[in-house]
Length: 152
Image (cartoon, rainbow, N blue to C red; front, top):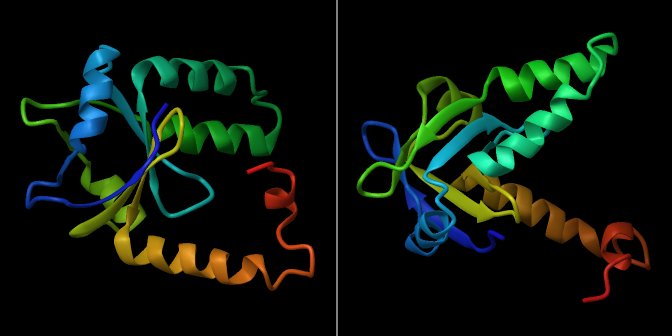
């Protein structure tokens, strides 16, 4: 299970160094094989170990091509999926197309999200995070409906 936040720089060749604590976990799970794709809801990328991607692929496969939304979901998530692997220095190459989609230039926010990682432009992530945090208490007197379902 991946968790935690890091701010990382992308090098001039478009490579992203995975934080050491996550590299260790990926190596332990024999998950040097990864799949990178775009997030259809946010301007960020998702990075899955291939074993987790296999579960996503099965879910996508079960969606009907006769349903327009399901078909578009498959086209976006599967269509932009790219196989990749950690190099000897624990880096992943981000394709120019995916970097452009997520507006990734130099500094990125790298977030563990359980079965995957999210890769955000650092400024975009900070703005999204602040907007959400500012709005949690403004929604109503009971706070966020989603947060209220959690026992923290």
